[in-house]
Image 1 (cartoon, rainbow, N blue to C red):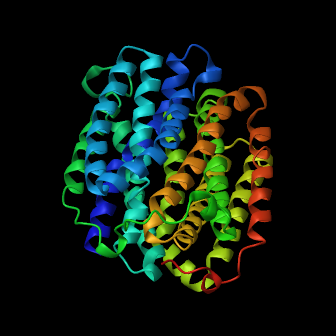
Image 2: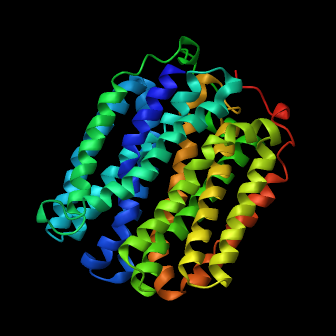
Length: 392
């Protein structure tokens, strides 16, 4: 587990990139964007970076190994954070979008940490390894918004410039931690054979269900979370501190359950875990759409949203690792992340416009069809993980 904990520590620093952008990017965007409808575009560019880089990153890792890509990406992200700081200081919205895109490209690499962790343990411990690495993001969820808020006026620069300067330093630390990572076990190294083509992997019901549930979890989460700071801070007049506290609670809801999800996987199985995730997200929609606009409604709704995402994402990732052989992992993982983060980018792009045209209540209700898609997909999933195909 040594390498799993190294990846967990690295994720605690590296995940601060996207979390800082999500916590403050929408607010900055409302001040420097040419129109409020595109205020969330830097966040969308970040997610687009995740989606577009996912498959190329996976293929690059297949050619060079994971470690050089992990370290190099963290260093490039440190430069991207400084680019964001410069953009905020000079009110350059286009440059902020470019910096967000580059941070997103790094996040596509960070998303590979969970797959790398699964390779350092036995197949039956994959769920535990994935959940352990996500604890690193829990630390980032606690630290990034708080540290970013404290550094927001650092040096007398325009608000939130200092947040991204500090982020750059955290990403350099992440690169240093990743330098300690050991070599991938021999059993996980790809043989000379090409393995099954992607279209054959896609024919597996379990693979399609894993991708679908991961896609829904990210799309719904991103759609609602991206719109929350705009609804709270811009439309309902909550302070920046109140808005940040809700986003922080949401991030805790996303990652704190990772302490218990390995137990949930063993006790209830993946199918029940996915159903619970859909139920938690449905409760979020109910609270947000019908309860009101008080602080407690935003707080409870976003915590439920985070919990639902965690249950669905951990379960779908664990399910995915059962559907491919070790030498097929890069293409299977790359396509999965391309689909997931492509949908997340679309949801984030639509969030700003939906908030301005539909309003908060209707925006939440627009997530219901996606949750129904996940429920329909889950009908074909075996009741217990033991019924799933074995990874070879």
